[in-house]
Picture (cartoon, rainbow, N blue to C red):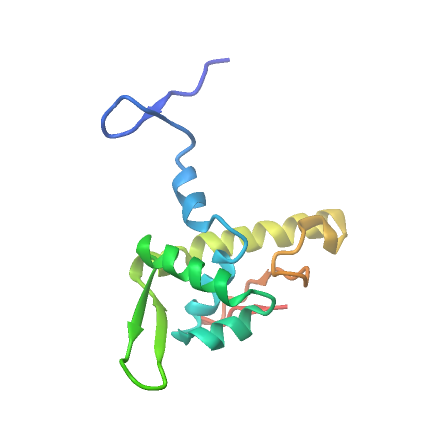
Length: 144
């Protein structure tokens, strides 16, 4: 059996791991996939996101949103109003993760049905054991 070819970075001196590693870096963390899910539904204000996600602290959401903005996955629009109004929306780069998340959801559904246990896939959505429901009717993707 032959060994897989070693992939190096653009400088040619640092070996890289699996090419999927880059995608996993963007999806790393407990909340990022769910933030992307809600922002795929449309732009959201901070408090709306916090309500949608349930269980996430103000500090954690704020930190995660800043990291995702720095990574180019979302934009933050401050309307300069009192009281403050800030909207978050996915960039094209963030929207491009939709098929990746749908593939992960499909895998979770398949794996869950193979084992017959809802616990087999873990808690995809914090504390609920939910997985993405893949519905091909337009952009209707809902949590079940």
